[in-house]
Each structure stands twice: as C-alpha cells, then as structure tokens.
Image 1 (cartoon, rainbow, N blue to C red):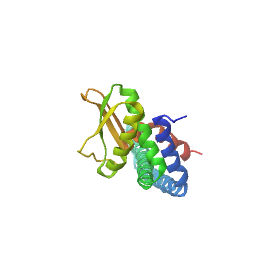
Image 2 (cartoon, helix red, strand yellow):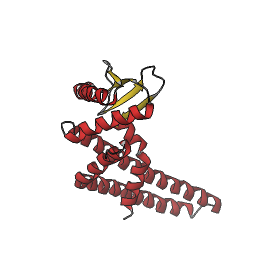
Image 3 (tube, one colour):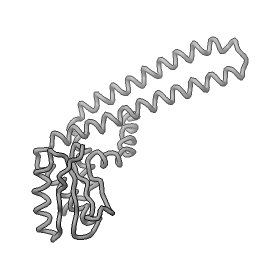
Length: 200
C-alpha cells in the first residue's frame, strides 16, 4: 500500500530528525543556550532598569517593565524561529543526501502519482530541477504507461532541492510538490515539535 505524499514528506522529516539526532540535539541545545543567555541578559537589564525605575513614579515602572517583558518575549520567539529554520535546513540537507537513494526515487514517484490523481485529467506538465531531469523523465515515462496519461517534463528548470511542480496541460491547476513547499506546509508542526523538545 503506497504512502500519501504528506506521509512521505513526514517520513523524510522524521528520518532527518532521527538520523541527525545528535546534530539536532546540539542545534537545539545551542539555541536553548542562546535563549537562556538572552533571558539572562534581559533579566540583568531588567534588574538594572528596576534600580533606576525605583526612583521614578509608579506608572513609569509599569511601562518600563512591560517593555522589558516584550523584549524578552521577542527574543524567545526569535530563538524558536531560528531553531525551526535549522530543522528545515537540516531536512533539506537530508533530502540532498538521499538523491541517489531508492527512497528519493520512490518519493518523486509518489509525488507525481498523487499530483496527477489530485489534479485529474489526461495531460500534464512537470517542472523540476536540472539535477532531477533524468530521474523525473524516467519516472514520468513509467507513470504515463501505467496510468494511461501524457506527461511532458518541461525543458525549463526550477530552483529546488528536490521534488516537482505539476500542472494540467492548460495550466489551470497546479500542485507544488517540491520539498521546500512541503516543509513550509509542515512549518507549524515542526515549530510545535521544537517547542515540545525545549520543555521536556
């Protein structure tokens, strides 16, 4: 039974997270250390500001504390986003390393099949990276024969680590199944995973 595209992309992300666990742990620890350092710096600044604030009127105290809290929150959220970006970059690096692996070919095959089924019709156009042209042409030929459809791999390349963009012949329906697009759609899920790891 073939996996859905989302399952395949999740599998790539999971493999990247699992197989690069030490690297990710180090990245997360460094990011967490940056968060702690920023918290410490902000905390120290708050203490210094509070010493000055103590001499000011009460309303000024509230305003300055609120600003310091906002700065601390901003620094924390920035650190979270940096970690999310690190996970996405690590996942894309993992995809690059999988280029000659059977799993990559299977993922591209599943992406093309799933896109054709989602879009519907008989004639399709595919765009991919220059590096993937040979592989995509081979897969497109096989799928054309198996599904009884016509697939044209466009001569113009797109800039992507991997995956395809596929549309119907008229160009009225298009699916972006590049790994970048898939990971971007999983960004919120990755963010939740990062936050969960920070607090466990």
